[in-house]
Image 1 (cartoon, rainbow, N blue to C red):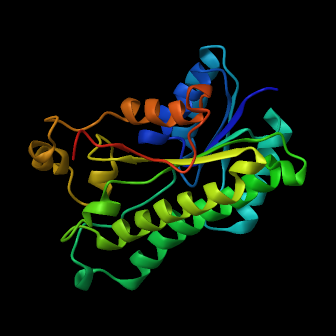
Image 2: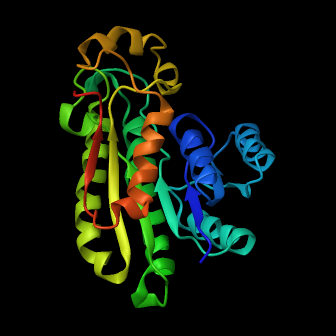
Length: 248
């Protein structure tokens, strides 16, 4: 059976690293993006230049109709999905809770939580032996913020990632017996543009001294963790929240 991965938010940062590594590991890759078509085209171009198969598909993961279309178009172009990486996520601007507007909180929950649940639901409908599927793997990108709380920065984001962890544990118990392993990677401080989009480009430099290993992760290091969870080397692993945080 051919290997097909859908990577949500797969055009930038950790998502781009996962898309490229998945292709290097033999997956045909659907690079999902919400608005940055040029970034998706760049990732797809890099993959195809190396002899891989990839397409970019625009979809808002917080919208059920978009998610259904994403999976349908991916299956039509690449074959049925065998691996889903729920990577799409936002933080909103860094601030205290009482300085943050409700719209930012709602958007964060919609993308980070509903997006994971909607995409996972669609994957289960296609992968589960209960529905005639051939099995597969789901990996969600959570965050160390789920257990650190992120006070003074984005507690609503931390809460959304706590929900991802709970969802991962519950869904794994629902569908592992149907041929789907469900896990999550919980990265710590990572060198991505997420910090700049949150309003603090220098956040990595400010915080890396509190990481026991002494530095931030690279997106490639997080991608390695995600691909390990999807691999046969992790064939007995389901319901795991794999901390990838340099000891923090």
